[in-house]
Each structure stands twice: as C-alpha cells, then as structure tokens.
Amino acid sequence: MTDRVEEALTRIGRLDPELSAFVDVWGEEARERARAVDRQLPLAGMPFAVKGPTGIRSHAAERLIAAGAVPVGSTAVPGPGTYWQTWGQGRHGRTVNPYRADRTPGGSSAGSAVAVAAGMVPLATGSDGAGSVRIPAAWCGVFGLKTTNGLLPSPDRTGLASAGVLTRSAAEARVYLDCVLGTPAGARTPLPLPLPAVYSPDLGFARTDPEVAVVVRAAVEGLVSAGVVQLISRQVPFTLLDPREAWLAVRGGATGVGEVGDAAGVRAENDRRLDRLFAGTELLLTPVTPNRPHGHDGPGDIYSTALTWAFNLSGHPAASIPAGFTADGCPVGLQLVARRGADVRLVEMAVAAENHAIRVRP
Image 1 (cartoon, rainbow, N blue to C red):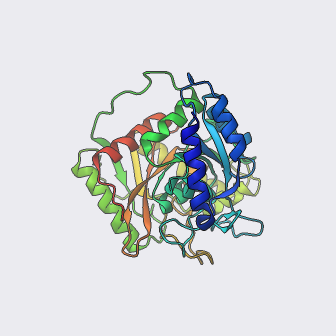
Image 2: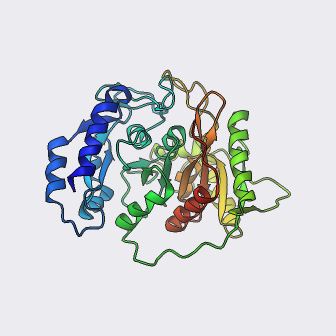
C-alpha cells in the first residue's frame, strides 16, 4: 500500500518547487497511513490531495479516507490579498500553469488542478462557488466536476459553493462519487447515445475569445461525428441573462427572490430558461471560460467566471473536460451541464465524451 504514496511524494518533491501546487505536504503522516491502511478497502493506498489548509476537514476528504485513500498534502488557493479571479499561493510561491509558467492555472482550486495535471496525485478535492473547480480544470487540461448544489455539505454560508473533484479523466472521478455519495453497485446504466444536447458559445452575453470558441466548437463537432451527442436544432440560440449582479448579490448576503430587485429577477428567469431547456435535452454545452489562461497580473476587465457562475446560482451539476489547445499552447475546456441531481449520469456522459473523442495534448 505504500508504493503509490511514496511515488506521489517523490513526484511532489521533484515538481512542486517549480509549480508550487502545495501549501503543505504530510510525508511521514501519509507513509504511516499507507502502512496501516486496511487492504480490503476499495481505495486502499490511493494518494490524494485536499484543497487548501482546511480541506482535510471536508466531507469528501473524510469519505475518501474512510475508503482507504491517503491524503498527502493540502493544495494552493489564492493567498491573502490576492485578486479573487487569479492564482494560487503555494509554499514555494505563486502557483503556475503546468503548460505555460507565465500563465495562471486558474482558481480557486489552483493547486488541486496543477497537482493532478502534473501527475503528483491522481485525485484532488476542490470546491466551486463561481467556477473554482471548472476553470482550473479547463486551464490545466484535466477533468473537473462541480456537484449539484446542496448534494454535499457546502463550504460556503451562501450555498453558492459546491464540493467538487479534479482528476486526469472523467472515468477516474467515478471513485470520488462512489465514496462521497455512497453510490450503490450497479447504479450506473448504459447511456443511450447520441445524447440530445444544446451548444452555446457565449450564453448570449459573454465575450468569448474567437480562438477559444473555435477550439470548443471543434470539440463539440467531434462529439457529434462520434455519435456521442446530437445537437438539437433551435431556431433561436439558447441564452441566459448575465448572472453577474445576481451572483454578487447572493454572495453579499441576499437569499430570497425579491430581496435584490432586478438581480433576483435575473436569477428566477434563468432558472425558468434552464428548466425549459432540460425538460427536452440531456446536456448544455459551452466553453468553460470565455478567455484563455491569463498572465499572473490578472485577467483585466474580463470575467473568467462569465460562463460558469450561472450554474452556481441555479444549482446544476457541471463539468469541464479537455477540448484542445489554442495556437499559443493554452488548454481550453468544454463545459457539460446536466439536470439537477444528475451527477452520476453527468460523469458517465463525460466518460462517453472522453472515450469517443480525441483528446489533444501537445
């Protein structure tokens, strides 16, 4: 049981000084856990990382440990005074993107995404209040899942943040859901392909980088050609109202419809539109971010969260899968959004997408 943990610690020791994915590494404690773990447990000896200094106390971490997995360290999140849209601060300095060190890995689950992308651990926990799992997953070329709001204990008093996970592939995220949800054996059923889906490059309001849109559209067309999805013909493109003010209002403490005027109306209208959409389709597909990974000075006036935070307000589960790369070597993510509560099915949809579509890596 100690071999996998020792391998993870060795890779962390070699790679982390450059990438700074970790806040702390629990070497001796991890070795002791690995030596003592019950070999009959389903995840016996599997190393994993937890998001931030308090991640070890999360519900997900507790369930993974109970299944025999071994926490090896806590990962970087934005440091004190760090602008919330940008990077992580690890024990060796700022966390850098493993594909381009001059770019951010995204946040706030920055270190978790980098640790998985660099192969330091096969799985890391995260939390997602506006895109904090999906954005770093997209920008580091890994799989990221935001669970349905309220499905698991929220780390955020507003309820915007949901527990999540980052793994190298959607298939590897199955073990996370099995543990944290107690998914019974045989719960997964074969998906009837193709899955009806709707694609939107901008949800009607985001300023999506044309090259990002081209990469994501090509990934969607690949799924269509492979028979994974069938785009539903729509006379009018699917759009939402820009959720920025509604998200900020809830983050500021508003909890009910009517408390913040137009912001509450935006949230209610978007819920109605999404309910109508998912009454007739399985998936909503979008880019994860309108922009590519930005430099360490920040994103300027572009909200990297523009295409993600609507689903923190609405509560839908959403995932990021690798879609390809821009010409300058930046990873791009494809976002998959499903009905509320369809988390297990969403992961299976992502697995189908990964199994049937080409994942481009430089």
